[in-house]
Image (cartoon, rainbow, N blue to C red; front, side):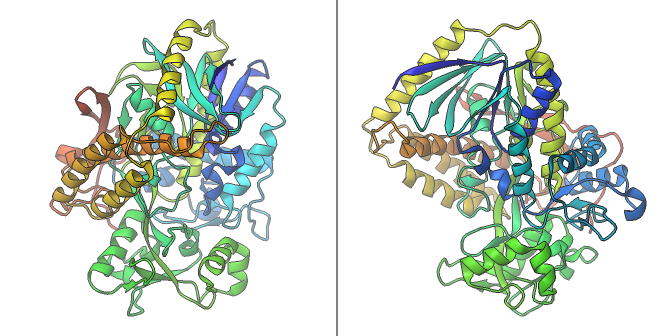
Length: 582
């Protein structure tokens, strides 16, 4: 291997909706006067955003839908179990409609009503229908529009299949990224004035997950290892409807279009848990309801996997409606299980899906240097990898794409201004730090260890699936912490079987597993520290929300002794915490 050095004004790490939107708005703001690198560990169009199915939230027709920006804000804050920062929520609700229209101008084929208006469907926790959609392939159509657009921007260069292994910081200032080009095997230093991290979440630390195998939290782990703080890492969302036995997502849009949840007795059991919302309660409530039904003996068991489940029922829906609005649900269930959703019940159970926690940013997407106060110089984060925080302890479905679009514009515009300033690319510090990382990667490749990284990953995922799932216990969280420490110790003795340089996916996987292990330990420690139940974090020994002691964000930073945990207040300005009833 040898190191190549590439200089840019801006480097965007991640090519999903958040990353591509940021890059486009950065160039629009700069008037094509900046060089922008878009770096992706997969081909850009394979980013996990293509898997987003249900839609994007925004108040498009307030009069016709009896909706308002304030109502969208209230629904989001209540859905978050009051842990969301309310100024950020207001920013989301105010700007989301403009971003839906921006994507319309890019060519997203939104489903429409007969009068030509964009159709909006109901989603969990929303008071009224406010989720715009393109069938059940919304993320794919948004990504296609972004990719078509970005190829027209001469100032943006896309680096497909480059895995970044280090975020390079010099005295609190961003100076570059160290990466491996999978196609060539070369190690590369990207030097730049400014950086956007947009690498998505880390749901793949669990074995039963809806997300693509690339959702390994790389950017969050890079920030953590660089000494930057993470926020609210204990809050992991389990989507109620992961297909059995694969975990593939069956979109919430299915319930938005009228699907029912049924137990082994055929009962629509959500009446016991959220009588007013039924299947369209927020995801944390629906997920707990499903597991409660299973634990009460009203579930079924899959012979192949041993997983217990309940049924999602679309059989009462018109087959033409399924074809028009849920074609991918039909396609997935037919191909994976040979089931026809218009005639057959679909086996599902909660699966790891979205990570509310991530890199600690302020309301403008600037990465913080510590729990509060100063920002890190030259770094922004956007999308699922960033914790602004608009989702708090539980995200409402369809708010994720809104977050990516809204902060993509905010961050892209801000980073262009920063890069156009008088900053100079720091050359020597970046080169020295990159040389150190090059030596580390070379050592990792040549190491003659005794541990198989894939076995370590399997044990990590099995531990989290068992101990940090929908319901947690104090003993289970302690077991998870202990096991993650053991696995990290074993990881130090891994071996890379493939010694080649071109498309060394063995090396790539080992790097990702290291990132996941790092984050899994943080999740376990932050979860054990929060002694209450709030949103997606439910602890059997502490079943109530405790606003007096725990109305605060968890901040986690790396230290010599391990994870250092501190807390900062939640920003509350309009909606006082109240009992969360649906």
